[in-house]
Length: 317
Image 1 (cartoon, rainbow, N blue to C red):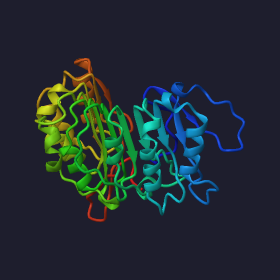
Image 2 (spheres, rainbow, N blue to C red):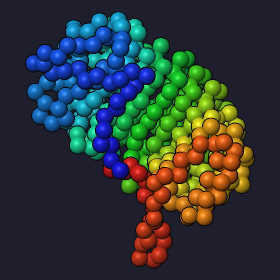
Image 3 (cartoon, one colour):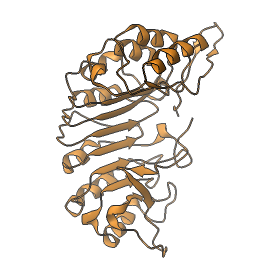
Image 4 (cartoon, rainbow, N blue to C red):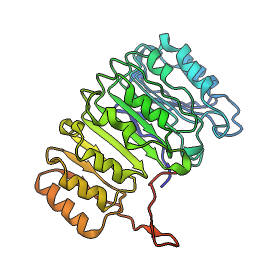
């Protein structure tokens, strides 16, 4: 699977593409949409920060609630340093900003594992009232431990996430965080975290208000499932998402035999490598308990020359 569609919604608002300089499109009310600022990913006639400057001049920025950063110029080769600087410079003009998504870029613009990123936590420091933050692309992504009093939702989408980012998130002090979504990815594209790196999250020591946890798109999905089968954090979750990865019968067996999961509202396991008998066991167990379980997109593992299973994540390159 590739990222083929742009975001349609952010912070409960429909996404609206800020038009190019020649457009005569009537702009909506500033607070009514999530504004997507983007330029051509190659040979753009306008730099992203120039498009953003036009946006700041055209819109009542005091009412802007959500911003979606699309492609910037030469995303295959360039980090969004100028983009982040432009956002930081505009902080005083955006007092109502509550949500940022950095890197809403489809595969036609740049494959997810080739999106250059950088140090993104200055955005959290600059916008202390931010409630929602998301970033796509793991190449050179930096996320050292940070404290943010208000953030409720954090999403990191990658085809391969470096362990230092995982550790930075796990060490962060986010007392209001309710939703955490991490795409760990595959070692082919830089994933090198182990389950032990997730321990501050799994132990429940941090993130006291966490209610929705997604640790997905991972080639170590079975190991994560085994760890979660006894992890203290699970007891306070309403949603657990282990989708998009390489989950097989070993991980599913751990979920069934570990601590009860029948308190969950939803268990998302779509894109999996489960046997049909295991799918039936999971369906019977969780549907009987009133848990919404997603077991769609069952995949058949390929085998290498030595007969070993070769599973794959939903999103890689």
